[in-house]
Image 1 (cartoon, rainbow, N blue to C red):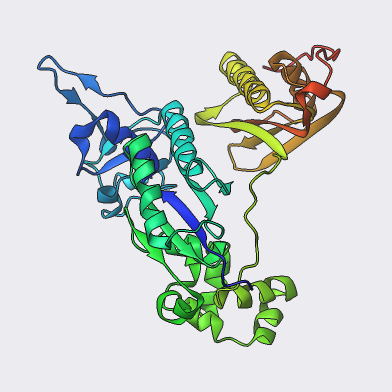
Image 2 (image 1 turned 90 degrees about the vertical axis):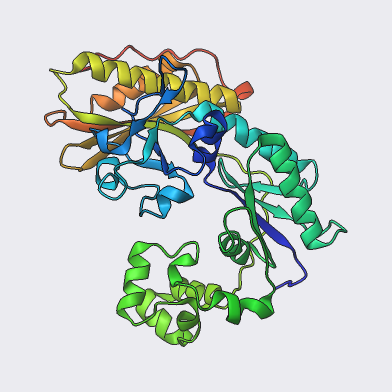
Length: 382
């Protein structure tokens, strides 16, 4: 492995919540949770002060999109159900998500970084990898300059981890949050990385972590000490070899500055399970909206799609998918709805539905696609 590489992982600090605190500075230092389809907007009272909803008052499905560090200290984290999390932090402020604001802030922080270090791999709305290797500037100085540029562009802080590869850089960016910089070399792995839980390695999920724990392997150092042959026997050759490498801090992946999306999708989980007949109007509205949002995403990114698919999840959590491949690429909402409707007719609709999704794949540049799809309007159950 080339240990002369300098790879940075930049992670915005509690990104969605931090964007909300720009709008509501009076909430700084408070336990704040963002998420939930039913979360209420703040209300301005007669005295000019704002009144905020509390987590204890939330009713319905929904999960936490993000939380402030004060809320996390109470045991409330992203991905938790809102009603369950109210048991830990009933008085936490609850705000609805504002994705337009988050996307705008994301574009601004990435542009600020690119003006200093242009070799960037976009990993999502709030994180990127950056290759520092060819920039003739001291590592800490460069990291601080990037942090200052991000703050100037957004008013937000970020944490940066810098290491010889992406694996270690991502781990490092989480070591000194918030607003931290961590620089690590391969020689530092035994002291800084091996004491950490194995689940800190990106790619070791809950199931793998549980299996490792059953084998008496809880830390990255304990994983590094296990013979390769044992890991291959327990996890298979591909996963076993990978576990052995990452435990020793080895990662040969390169920074990918451009990548073509394989698919674009939108889905909606309902607040209550919907019945095809009794809730036909609501389902129809949701279905059409999903198709239109997929169309907007396609056109904004410059693509058309030849394969349209749908996903349903019933009230018992069983999921079913169907798709159809078209003779030409489509990008208009009504064309996507026609194709998705054909898929819908091939799915049993005898049970209540809790989730509906629409997916576009088989992508092609918009300029290469025809502008009209002659599909027949489907007779839909909703």
